[in-house]
Image (tube, rainbow, N blue to C red; front, side, top):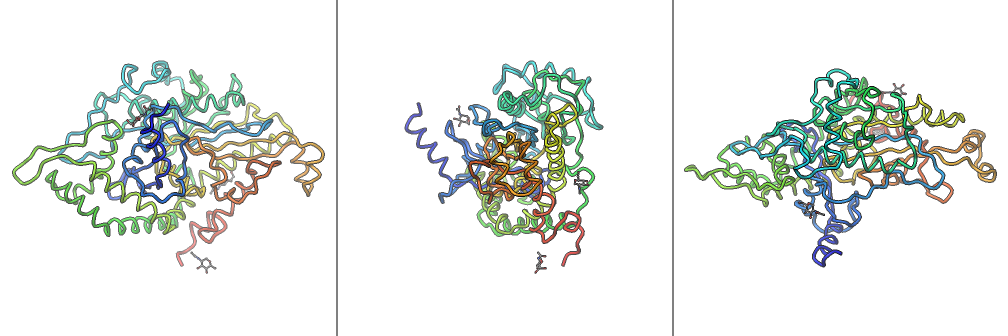
Length: 509
Ligand SMILES: *[C@@H]1O[C@H](CO)[C@@H](O)[C@H](O)[C@H]1NC(C)=O
Ligand SMILES: *[C@@H]1O[C@H](CO)[C@@H](O)[C@H](O)[C@H]1NC(C)=O
Ligand SMILES: *[C@@H]1O[C@H](CO)[C@@H](O)[C@H](O)[C@H]1NC(C)=O
């Protein structure tokens, strides 16, 4: 039972207007890094989208949501479908779990966090010991270069910069386990799955590789290493051989200019940076470059008090404060609103995520076609599960490209899931109602549909390609063809083009 105070808090948290904050480049100072949002709503149903209330967002509560502390049960709507629908494939993109900061705050002690894994430390997980043991056998797997030399477990008793923490590992063991249960009754995999049925890809950072492995272990405990190939994506956009796109870079530069100007015009933020720099006894410029919000978020997520410096003779000394942190976070929330207004980020995101979406669409179409032809779906040759282990600078543009611009900024261990479903073969009457021969033969074998979920919540009908879909009883899901025509043509209308090539290479007008 919730106490009244907790109940009030929960109500407040549900009502605050949550706005995500999106950095442009994760690993670079001057562009708000890894600032991010989510919300902790106790046991009540969490929502990915802000409620249409107009209360001021509370930057501190939102920061806790971003931490995604794994101390409560989560609701997951993955695997939910109308009766008799068959799950054909699942495509997951995750952000890595909780990590050590990428930057340190000058003159201060780095936060004391142990990145070795131990069941005696919190948060832990029932699978943690067997996961550690299984990773020790990783030499049996196939690793696309250079992944073979990336450590498969975090291991430093004083975390290195950007290293995945035990919290990060536990977050993804939980994610994987959640989906394991969600799909169990749909028997996505036969117990003797073949190597081609699973596609796992990651960037070359240890935190993404380790997050992907933790997820996979939760999903398929004690998986057979010899069947696994882990593929490398060198770009954080997962764009493979289609990364070249001059127009995308132009939109990004314009977006960064917008972001810079908004920040420069924020006098409260200026004052706050000056106060913080005075406390630390460093030039304001140096403090900005050190991107302090990244490190402060880590302190907050790990329950550590903010850093202090001894009082000196030059007026320096004291501690960084929650009030200062709140100002930086508030500005990040303002930036989110302005970012949506300007629309440049959305254009960037469309071009940035096309190659990934195109690849996903092609996989889905292949699977749909083979099941349509009446063949046994999920035959040993079909890829039924894809896992892409990525960064906030991957997940945020993917959300934007899908039209989920109101969605919260990707917290640690955020997940986007695409599910491909097939309806049961239609009965006579239904087939007749639809016109056209193609429709008829498709309906005979059942039709294919897509679901999109963000952090366990079904957001299918918030996406650009299904927002206006008329849901009705005979077709409660979003047709795959909506997604295919979106990816292959419609998404480029935002940039006045009909194809990726045209959009990328057209001369600026
Ligand atoms: C989870 O941790 C957060 C942050 O420390 C805390 O505010 C919250 O009450 C905890 N929730 C539960 C269910 O323990
Ligand atoms: C998009 O996907 C199709 C089908 O797989 C492929 O032939 C094409 O090269 C892809 N285009 C880009 C730009 O990635
Ligand atoms: C898009 O095309 C229309 C018509 O050709 C033109 O008026 C408009 O300025 C173009 N917009 C952009 C952003 O290029």
